[in-house]
Amino acid sequence: MPAKTAIREAVIECMECGVRSTFRGQITLGVQLTCPECETWMEVISLDPMQVDWIYEEPEYDDEQEDG
Image (cartoon, rainbow, N blue to C red; front, side, top):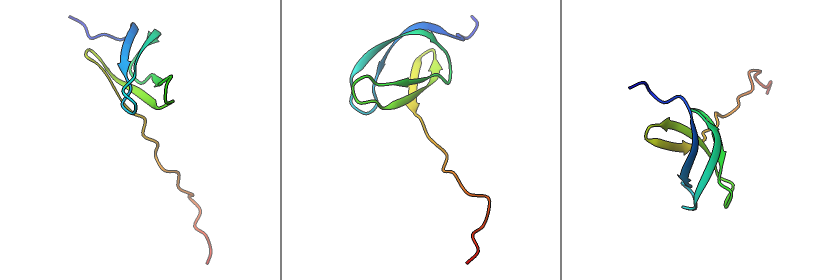
């Protein structure tokens, strides 16, 4: 059986507040979802089974070194 590449509806439990919300539309790996209750950002990391994880942002570094 081929791996799923998208689903049309998913019930996701927020990792922050625990609220279960239904998301509809084209849900694919890497899609970012926002909890409607607490506005936590999550990213779809697996479709079968459906799993989300926190969205981690890489710290931004300035390539230029400051003169001291």
